[in-house]
Amino acid sequence: MHEQDTRTPAERHDALERDVFYLLTEPDDGQPLWSVEDIAREAETDDPMVPIHGLLRAGLIHQTTDGYVFATRAGVRVVQIIGHVA
Image (cartoon, rainbow, N blue to C red; front, side, top):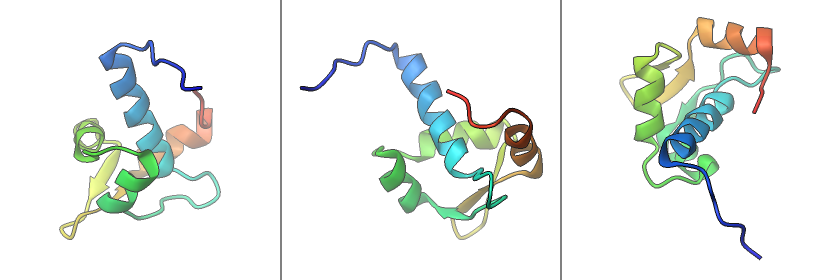
């Protein structure tokens, strides 16, 4: 049975940004490089650029000229300090 999502649109957006950020900050791997298409598949979103743009504006990720994204050193360090928390 499918549970109804009772979160507000803002809460869903924040959760998607967090999930994408966590994809880019694997504790063991440091700063993995992801394609936008892979992020869309893994995060199960039709428009991965929405959370990507938010993370870019916040300075937590970088995007290469050919479209790959990765966490900034500061973003990785935040995750090293606090971990992946929900």
